[in-house]
Image (cartoon, rainbow, N blue to C red; front, side, top):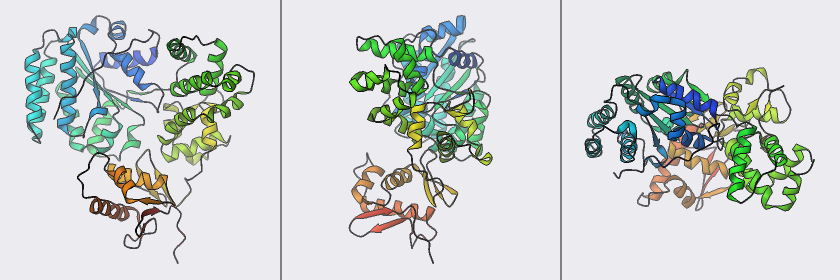
Length: 466
């Protein structure tokens, strides 16, 4: 297994950037507490992540303790799988990278010994005990100084939490207990942990670590919006007018991804540029921006990352309806994510997002639904979780429901990186397993039907059986 690239050079933000969130997170790190950061697509998790890695930010918020605090990025985007070996290799690779960069808190660490322990871990194969021993010794080496603290920031933790073996979470909890209050984990996700995977004792133990330290990363305020647009404009040799900032902040709610897409779109098209600078109603501006593919794509990413109950709640708000009292369960999560704001009656964060939501078909009352965020098929109200492979296959069938999906398209969706799988048999096996999970009679399928010589078709609303 090859070593993977650790921490990139962080990009400095203004000192005031996400000041409240930064202080809370680094305050938890200072006291050795683990935390969870939940933020929807495009809200700015990556910028906050890099801000926390910036030595200037650490010095400002941690003071003298910054010299004894190691904050390392564990980028799960590079993980080929979610085994103990892969995760601990990413952790040790990040620590080696910081040692190579002469991090002040690692000045006395034996770099050669750290590399040796990483090699032992990589050579351990599937021997979990050897892997854990090497990882624990390496972290013990980093924490050898009496005042030293280590915080591991896990980027894109969603898939690992959903798919990893429960044993991995037990091991993470055990690692933290071995270095209690000197080792902290900060997990960055798009959703609350309960929405990502069904509970089990191992995951419950990990949740206990962050239960009282969960931060919802909401859209920024006007100052954050002005700073973001100023940086984008500067790269184009421009300077945004206050009127433009005010108008785009109003229509996007300050959501970073929407702001960026709306500004770049409006500056690239004369009609939109004029509309942004006019006195047209915000709703009119929202509808015009939704016709731009980049803006629509940002809305779609937010929407598709939400489970069905949260989509249903937002749809009711977008239509100016009052959700039924029994449907208030998703409200806490939507508040945490900043998608429902309550300066006055509860409403959707941004007019542009509300406009997008109002265009979406209401599928939550149908007999069969795909809850993409939870990676589960809901059949007559019963939620059935899928594996990662099954999710890729069913996701394609769902996107093209009612249409024939050819074998080749399904194979590419299911096994994008594996050219050696025996295609026909592998696909048949997985379709059979899918049917076994969701079909009332798997041998007489109602939902996933076979098209002879063509492929498969998903029938989401089949006719009632006699």
